Image (cartoon, rainbow, N blue to C red):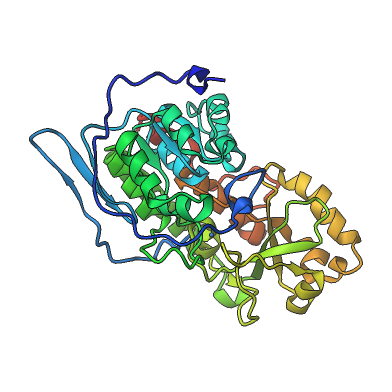
Length: 404
């Protein structure tokens, strides 16, 4: 099937002409299939107070309206004009594009299964062409170069080192697609535990700012950042004292009857953990010696190990297509009847919840932070199964649609 027939317009010219900078040398291919495609989730953000010294630069040339965006690891990328079409590897960068008002230019995605676009249903006037991106999944072609040629985008929002370390690309392949199709701009920042990622990481909003530079949407970015900062500040002023907050165990298991779990570490500042950092909870695995999931570490823990830790709260990833009630009626119900799991304090207190997305962008993060606050502090923010809203949906929608 010709995937160009999915409604995407054919470009008549190349918008992104020049690709500068060198991609840092990569390591060998490591098995990451559970992190790169498939059904639901598999792993990590930074607090709003986290700051990192900004060494990248962005310049705009006045003469020909070209501009450059600099982001590790790709380096400096020059655009002759604003990209008219784009593809993201993960849902976090896809969500950034939607937030910046260019969701209608998205032609596909790495894997649609972990792109949770249902949050847009709560935002008046905000939507994406879900059918098109599901038809144009790069993972369907094992992230082959042919898929990149076929989609013929103006920019690829993804980390080229990810292609090298997860999918067996060589530097020559990255250079070929950059030259013949379009450049790469992106940084794999959802976790910070991979040895091959030996270059700069970006917080969610630092990466979001770079995407705003790519699409020349500074005003929308600033509006989102203002909304986000106000929202997080309001949440944090209402949090209980630190010594009254629960410790949490964040794990992954896709089954409704889980027996083994991939652990995540909250001390990792990857963007998939942003809401937990902002909510100020502590990591139940601290001091245990258990490491988090990474490209090279696929270790798992069982209920016996959990019982030794006995966390206040268990957060379980890979169930993001379920509602809070559906999760309780399946996963929690199973754990309550399990001979070992039923001894866990979190299970006995019914404090086992969905753990959030592996990849999250600025819109999704608002919803996940709201949900996390209600999961952990229902007495303050309302029950997660209730209808209390902690941020203004219409204000978000107005930013996306340009109505604000």
